Length: 243
Ligand SMILES: NC(=O)c1ccc[n+]([C@@H]2O[C@H](COP(=O)([O-])OP(=O)(O)OC[C@H]3O[C@@H](n4cnc5c(N)ncnc54)[C@H](OP(=O)(O)O)[C@@H]3O)[C@@H](O)[C@H]2O)c1
Image (cartoon, rainbow, N blue to C red):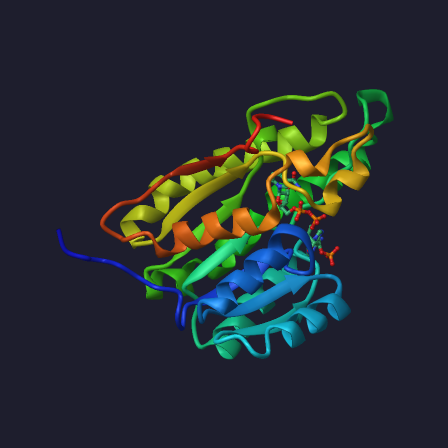
Protein backbone atom coordinates (compact mmCIF):
# COMPACT_ATOMS: atom_id res chain seq x y z
CA UNK A 1 0.00 0.00 0.00
CA UNK A 2 1.36 3.37 -0.93
CA UNK A 3 0.51 6.80 0.41
CA UNK A 4 -1.33 7.89 -2.73
CA UNK A 5 -3.25 11.11 -2.33
CA UNK A 6 -1.91 11.80 1.17
CA UNK A 7 -2.14 15.47 1.99
CA UNK A 8 -0.74 17.24 5.03
CA UNK A 9 -1.73 20.49 6.68
CA UNK A 10 1.39 22.45 5.80
CA UNK A 11 0.52 25.37 3.54
CA UNK A 12 -3.19 24.46 3.38
CA UNK A 13 -5.32 27.57 2.96
CA UNK A 14 -8.42 27.37 5.13
CA UNK A 15 -11.40 29.65 5.65
CA UNK A 16 -12.71 28.86 9.14
CA UNK A 17 -15.83 30.53 10.53
CA UNK A 18 -16.61 30.89 14.22
CA UNK A 19 -12.92 30.92 15.02
CA UNK A 20 -13.06 33.32 17.97
CA UNK A 21 -13.89 30.75 20.67
CA UNK A 22 -14.96 27.19 21.43
CA UNK A 23 -14.56 24.55 18.74
CA UNK A 24 -13.49 27.04 16.07
CA UNK A 25 -10.70 28.47 18.20
CA UNK A 26 -9.36 25.00 18.99
CA UNK A 27 -9.51 24.13 15.27
CA UNK A 28 -7.66 27.30 14.27
CA UNK A 29 -4.82 26.58 16.70
CA UNK A 30 -4.61 22.91 15.74
CA UNK A 31 -4.48 23.66 11.99
CA UNK A 32 -1.97 26.50 12.44
CA UNK A 33 0.09 24.09 14.55
CA UNK A 34 0.26 21.83 11.50
CA UNK A 35 1.35 24.68 9.22
CA UNK A 36 -1.99 25.72 7.71
CA UNK A 37 -2.86 29.33 6.88
CA UNK A 38 -6.26 30.28 8.19
CA UNK A 39 -8.64 33.10 7.44
CA UNK A 40 -10.33 33.22 10.85
CA UNK A 41 -13.86 34.61 10.69
CA UNK A 42 -16.12 35.76 13.56
CA UNK A 43 -17.78 38.99 14.64
CA UNK A 44 -15.45 39.44 17.62
CA UNK A 45 -12.41 41.17 16.12
CA UNK A 46 -10.54 41.47 19.42
CA UNK A 47 -10.78 37.75 20.11
CA UNK A 48 -9.51 37.05 16.60
CA UNK A 49 -6.56 39.40 17.09
CA UNK A 50 -5.72 37.64 20.37
CA UNK A 51 -5.94 34.29 18.58
CA UNK A 52 -3.62 35.45 15.81
CA UNK A 53 -1.17 36.62 18.48
CA UNK A 54 -1.32 33.25 20.22
CA UNK A 55 -0.51 31.53 16.93
CA UNK A 56 2.47 33.77 16.17
CA UNK A 57 4.99 31.09 17.19
CA UNK A 58 3.21 28.29 15.33
CA UNK A 59 4.35 27.09 11.88
CA UNK A 60 1.13 28.27 10.23
CA UNK A 61 -0.63 31.61 10.36
CA UNK A 62 -3.99 32.94 11.51
CA UNK A 63 -5.34 35.95 9.62
CA UNK A 64 -8.22 37.65 11.46
CA UNK A 65 -11.26 38.48 9.35
CA UNK A 66 -13.93 40.13 11.50
CA UNK A 67 -17.38 39.76 9.96
CA UNK A 68 -20.89 38.42 10.28
CA UNK A 69 -21.42 35.22 8.29
CA UNK A 70 -25.12 35.97 7.87
CA UNK A 71 -24.36 39.04 5.76
CA UNK A 72 -25.29 38.09 2.17
CA UNK A 73 -23.08 40.63 0.44
CA UNK A 74 -20.28 39.85 2.88
CA UNK A 75 -19.89 36.32 1.48
CA UNK A 76 -18.71 37.60 -1.90
CA UNK A 77 -16.31 40.07 -0.24
CA UNK A 78 -14.99 37.30 1.99
CA UNK A 79 -14.27 35.06 -0.99
CA UNK A 80 -12.41 37.87 -2.71
CA UNK A 81 -10.35 38.63 0.41
CA UNK A 82 -9.62 34.95 0.99
CA UNK A 83 -8.30 34.70 -2.56
CA UNK A 84 -6.08 37.72 -2.02
CA UNK A 85 -4.85 37.10 1.52
CA UNK A 86 -4.37 33.33 1.30
CA UNK A 87 -3.61 33.14 -2.44
CA UNK A 88 -6.45 30.65 -2.96
CA UNK A 89 -8.60 28.41 -0.77
CA UNK A 90 -8.13 24.68 -0.09
CA UNK A 91 -10.86 24.30 2.52
CA UNK A 92 -13.95 25.99 3.90
CA UNK A 93 -14.95 25.02 7.43
CA UNK A 94 -18.47 26.18 8.22
CA UNK A 95 -18.27 26.13 12.00
CA UNK A 96 -19.92 29.39 13.16
CA UNK A 97 -23.00 28.60 15.18
CA UNK A 98 -25.48 30.46 17.35
CA UNK A 99 -28.98 29.49 18.39
CA UNK A 100 -31.95 30.56 20.44
CA UNK A 101 -33.03 27.67 22.66
CA UNK A 102 -36.69 28.22 23.65
CA UNK A 103 -39.88 26.22 23.80
CA UNK A 104 -42.19 26.73 20.86
CA UNK A 105 -44.51 29.55 22.05
CA UNK A 106 -41.52 31.55 23.27
CA UNK A 107 -39.59 30.99 20.07
CA UNK A 108 -40.31 34.07 17.95
CA UNK A 109 -40.07 34.09 14.15
CA UNK A 110 -37.02 36.35 14.60
CA UNK A 111 -35.38 33.78 16.91
CA UNK A 112 -36.08 31.05 14.38
CA UNK A 113 -34.75 33.04 11.43
CA UNK A 114 -31.63 34.15 13.34
CA UNK A 115 -30.76 30.55 14.19
CA UNK A 116 -31.25 29.36 10.62
CA UNK A 117 -29.28 32.33 9.29
CA UNK A 118 -26.08 31.38 11.13
CA UNK A 119 -26.34 27.59 11.13
CA UNK A 120 -27.85 26.97 7.70
CA UNK A 121 -27.95 29.98 5.40
CA UNK A 122 -24.35 31.08 6.08
CA UNK A 123 -22.86 27.72 5.01
CA UNK A 124 -24.93 27.93 1.81
CA UNK A 125 -23.77 31.51 1.14
CA UNK A 126 -20.09 30.79 1.79
CA UNK A 127 -20.01 27.53 -0.16
CA UNK A 128 -21.63 29.35 -3.07
CA UNK A 129 -19.09 32.17 -2.99
CA UNK A 130 -16.05 29.98 -2.46
CA UNK A 131 -16.94 27.13 -4.85
CA UNK A 132 -14.86 28.52 -7.76
CA UNK A 133 -11.74 28.78 -5.57
CA UNK A 134 -12.36 25.35 -4.07
CA UNK A 135 -12.75 23.87 -7.54
CA UNK A 136 -9.42 25.39 -8.55
CA UNK A 137 -7.66 23.72 -5.61
CA UNK A 138 -9.68 20.48 -5.49
CA UNK A 139 -10.66 21.49 -1.98
CA UNK A 140 -12.81 20.50 0.96
CA UNK A 141 -15.98 21.85 2.55
CA UNK A 142 -16.48 20.69 6.11
CA UNK A 143 -19.79 21.50 7.72
CA UNK A 144 -19.85 21.34 11.50
CA UNK A 145 -23.24 19.85 12.22
CA UNK A 146 -24.41 18.50 15.58
CA UNK A 147 -26.01 15.45 17.05
CA UNK A 148 -29.04 17.80 17.19
CA UNK A 149 -29.42 17.15 13.46
CA UNK A 150 -30.69 13.66 14.27
CA UNK A 151 -31.68 13.79 17.99
CA UNK A 152 -34.40 16.18 19.14
CA UNK A 153 -34.55 17.87 22.53
CA UNK A 154 -36.95 20.25 24.24
CA UNK A 155 -36.17 23.91 23.45
CA UNK A 156 -34.10 22.88 20.44
CA UNK A 157 -36.67 23.37 17.65
CA UNK A 158 -34.77 26.07 15.76
CA UNK A 159 -31.33 24.54 16.34
CA UNK A 160 -32.39 20.97 15.46
CA UNK A 161 -34.15 22.23 12.32
CA UNK A 162 -31.11 24.26 11.30
CA UNK A 163 -28.64 21.41 11.80
CA UNK A 164 -30.91 18.88 10.05
CA UNK A 165 -31.13 21.41 7.21
CA UNK A 166 -27.35 21.78 7.17
CA UNK A 167 -26.99 18.02 6.75
CA UNK A 168 -29.53 18.04 3.88
CA UNK A 169 -27.66 20.87 2.21
CA UNK A 170 -24.41 18.98 2.69
CA UNK A 171 -25.71 15.70 1.25
CA UNK A 172 -26.91 17.49 -1.89
CA UNK A 173 -23.55 19.22 -2.24
CA UNK A 174 -21.63 15.97 -1.72
CA UNK A 175 -23.17 14.80 -5.00
CA UNK A 176 -23.16 18.12 -6.82
CA UNK A 177 -19.59 19.13 -6.03
CA UNK A 178 -17.90 15.73 -6.25
CA UNK A 179 -17.64 15.92 -10.08
CA UNK A 180 -15.96 19.30 -9.62
CA UNK A 181 -13.35 17.73 -7.33
CA UNK A 182 -14.69 19.32 -4.13
CA UNK A 183 -15.12 16.96 -1.18
CA UNK A 184 -17.97 17.85 1.20
CA UNK A 185 -18.00 16.30 4.67
CA UNK A 186 -20.39 16.55 7.58
CA UNK A 187 -18.61 16.57 10.94
CA UNK A 188 -21.27 15.83 13.56
CA UNK A 189 -20.08 16.19 17.17
CA UNK A 190 -22.10 15.34 20.24
CA UNK A 191 -22.02 17.56 23.33
CA UNK A 192 -18.78 19.53 23.37
CA UNK A 193 -17.58 21.65 26.29
CA UNK A 194 -17.96 25.22 25.03
CA UNK A 195 -19.79 28.41 25.95
CA UNK A 196 -22.65 27.46 23.64
CA UNK A 197 -24.13 25.56 26.59
CA UNK A 198 -24.55 28.82 28.53
CA UNK A 199 -27.53 29.60 26.27
CA UNK A 200 -29.28 26.25 26.85
CA UNK A 201 -31.69 26.07 29.82
CA UNK A 202 -30.70 23.40 32.36
CA UNK A 203 -27.64 22.10 34.23
CA UNK A 204 -24.92 20.30 32.32
CA UNK A 205 -21.68 18.64 33.32
CA UNK A 206 -18.95 19.89 30.98
CA UNK A 207 -16.55 17.23 32.25
CA UNK A 208 -18.71 14.59 30.50
CA UNK A 209 -18.52 16.40 27.16
CA UNK A 210 -16.05 16.18 24.28
CA UNK A 211 -13.16 18.63 24.70
CA UNK A 212 -13.08 21.13 21.76
CA UNK A 213 -9.52 20.00 20.97
CA UNK A 214 -10.84 16.54 20.09
CA UNK A 215 -13.23 18.01 17.53
CA UNK A 216 -10.21 19.87 16.15
CA UNK A 217 -8.33 16.56 15.95
CA UNK A 218 -11.18 15.07 13.91
CA UNK A 219 -11.22 18.11 11.62
CA UNK A 220 -7.53 17.55 10.96
CA UNK A 221 -8.32 13.91 10.15
CA UNK A 222 -10.95 14.90 7.59
CA UNK A 223 -8.71 17.55 6.04
CA UNK A 224 -5.76 15.23 5.71
CA UNK A 225 -7.67 12.13 4.62
CA UNK A 226 -6.28 10.83 1.34
CA UNK A 227 -8.27 11.84 -1.73
CA UNK A 228 -8.33 8.11 -2.49
CA UNK A 229 -11.30 7.92 -0.12
CA UNK A 230 -14.06 10.33 0.82
CA UNK A 231 -16.09 10.25 3.97
CA UNK A 232 -19.54 11.79 4.01
CA UNK A 233 -20.29 11.99 7.74
CA UNK A 234 -18.05 11.67 10.76
CA UNK A 235 -19.88 11.32 14.09
CA UNK A 236 -18.24 11.97 17.48
CA UNK A 237 -19.77 11.05 20.83
CA UNK A 238 -18.64 12.01 24.34
CA UNK A 239 -16.60 9.21 25.96
CA UNK A 240 -19.39 8.18 28.35
CA UNK A 241 -22.12 8.28 25.68
CA UNK A 242 -24.68 10.97 24.94
CA UNK A 243 -24.91 13.82 27.52
N1 LIG B 1 -20.85 22.86 21.89
C1 LIG B 1 -21.48 21.77 21.48
O1 LIG B 1 -21.93 20.92 22.27
C2 LIG B 1 -21.61 21.50 20.01
C3 LIG B 1 -21.94 20.19 19.60
C4 LIG B 1 -22.08 19.91 18.26
C5 LIG B 1 -21.90 20.91 17.33
N2 LIG B 1 -21.61 22.19 17.74
C6 LIG B 1 -21.44 23.19 16.70
O2 LIG B 1 -20.10 23.59 16.68
C7 LIG B 1 -20.01 24.93 16.18
C8 LIG B 1 -19.19 25.78 17.14
O3 LIG B 1 -19.92 25.86 18.36
P1 LIG B 1 -19.23 26.14 19.78
O4 LIG B 1 -19.79 25.14 20.70
O5 LIG B 1 -17.79 26.30 19.63
O6 LIG B 1 -19.95 27.53 20.12
P2 LIG B 1 -19.40 28.89 20.70
O7 LIG B 1 -18.34 28.67 21.70
O8 LIG B 1 -20.62 29.67 21.09
O9 LIG B 1 -18.73 29.59 19.42
C9 LIG B 1 -19.51 29.98 18.33
C10 LIG B 1 -18.62 30.68 17.32
O10 LIG B 1 -19.44 31.13 16.22
C11 LIG B 1 -19.22 32.51 16.00
N3 LIG B 1 -20.42 33.15 15.47
C12 LIG B 1 -21.67 33.11 15.98
N4 LIG B 1 -22.49 33.86 15.22
C13 LIG B 1 -21.74 34.35 14.20
C14 LIG B 1 -22.02 35.21 13.11
N5 LIG B 1 -23.25 35.69 12.87
N6 LIG B 1 -21.01 35.53 12.26
C15 LIG B 1 -19.76 35.06 12.48
N7 LIG B 1 -19.44 34.25 13.50
C16 LIG B 1 -20.42 33.91 14.36
C17 LIG B 1 -18.83 33.05 17.37
O11 LIG B 1 -18.07 34.24 17.27
P3 LIG B 1 -18.63 35.73 17.48
O12 LIG B 1 -19.66 35.68 18.57
O13 LIG B 1 -17.39 36.50 17.82
O14 LIG B 1 -19.20 36.12 16.15
C18 LIG B 1 -17.95 31.92 17.89
O15 LIG B 1 -16.66 32.04 17.36
C19 LIG B 1 -21.45 25.40 15.99
O16 LIG B 1 -21.83 25.23 14.65
C20 LIG B 1 -22.23 24.46 16.88
O17 LIG B 1 -23.55 24.32 16.45
C21 LIG B 1 -21.44 22.49 19.04
